[in-house]
Length: 151
Image 1 (spheres, rainbow, N blue to C red):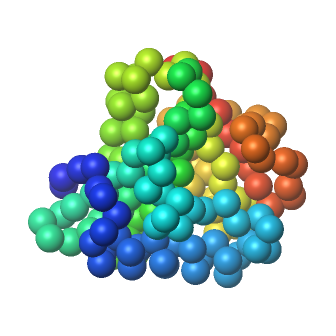
Image 2: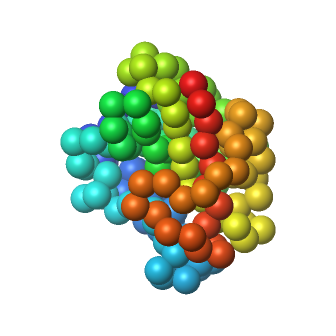
């Protein structure tokens, strides 16, 4: 599998992000959806990666710099056909490597509290993320779980 920085212009990436947003709005109230659309992911403080298996998009993930020492993981998504095949692990390892290269001291993320998000929370726990309070511009929300990891 190839992980590359993506310009968010391909139809495959647009499709996976549409699926991601559709799922988020299906399981969370609108005010509790913090997933970013294509335009918001194109901001300069965000690096977005796509994961490819040949010409098939297997997944994606992004890293948003909050400040010089703290970044947030965004837009983690595995394509339906690749679930359970280690794509999320590969992108998480890649993001952690980039975070170390950039000398971040902390990575944080927001995910959902509903059962739909159990696989995501288990993945983050596996990589040493611990539950915490809101960070950045987030506020307490019964539909949000906040996690962080010191690097």
